[in-house]
Image 1 (cartoon, rainbow, N blue to C red):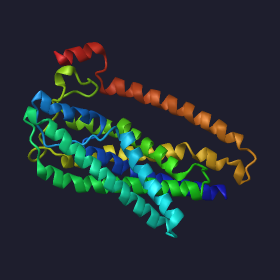
Image 2: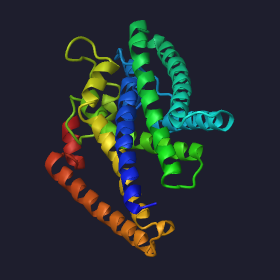
Image 3: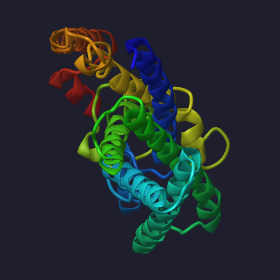
Image 4: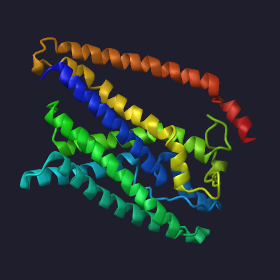
Length: 304
């Protein structure tokens, strides 16, 4: 294959990955599954009842990895026994993964909220009815995008990794990015508006989440609206960047495609990692300098 065609396929993969990251972050926001939302589970125990959907099936990486691998196994199995087109396989696998995800979200929601009845936490059926379809739609889109990426990599880039295993890896990756990137622009800013940026969450603030929305009592839909402006797009860009930036050198300098300078890909990869480390350090220092407080004495002053 021409390296330019390979780069074009890789660019398409990056575009699909951006959608996958976007929908993954919003799905975790609607269902209160991202890292800061562990405080949603704690809130009723601290006498802060709420109307947020609380599923927290598991960490985002494992939850998305499970959905992706289920969809991939169904798609590959149908491909073995039936003569179906790739789009049909992707849709069928995504529907199967979505259904299982909805079952887990349902049982998790009712189980968690019911167990908090001793803390006077009501179980709102309207929250369940309005949030489940949105969770299902986002889960379907995330799984479908991951399966599209897997088939593109398998067919056009000759990755050599079985599609179910590749889907598991990508599902865990997008979930981890959602936890690491999306949460910073949702949990810290939406759930804890009463705390200064960078001050951390003191034990005294455990469960003290912001529960009022622009109109009425806050729900996962309000949080999703907020995250769709920055947290979701940032997660999508991060996932797309991970796939594109870590793969372009192997595509461009692939010896299997007639390039005798395959070792240049290794050098390019090392230089890229080094440059990323330098940029990350610069951004961290800039954030500490401009958006603190970060020092321990400043944290103590805020708590007092």
